[in-house]
Image 1 (spheres, one colour):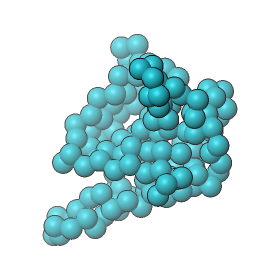
Image 2: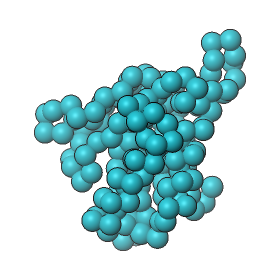
Image 3: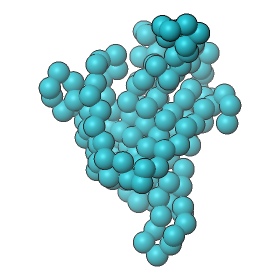
Image 4: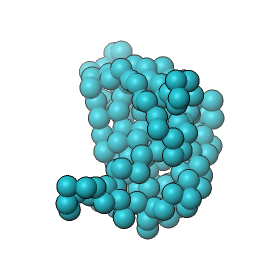
Length: 150
């Protein structure tokens, strides 16, 4: 499982001209699910997202606070293209989990993050939809978490 995590001042997801989710200060997390992912991979990525010290307190210059400690929000966005490979000019997504299985796995992941944090602070897009993701980077600060290679 992979997550591209960006610290943001705000972000939103729009589908067919309608905003389906939005957050203030927090993290936007693009989530890719691999064909071999299991619950332990979801647990690992969940912990990384919620415990990553991506923020600084006002009295510190260091990276000393996570999204939980700042009461930030989390916007999860499914993105199978994180497992795309370019062996030829056309991308190959064979390492991504098949759509129906991935949808269930991703939805369980969203629920896990909500359970581990505050449900109202965790938003998501619409699985499988063409989404317009807008965000205002804070930094920019971007991290990549991978349950297989970290």
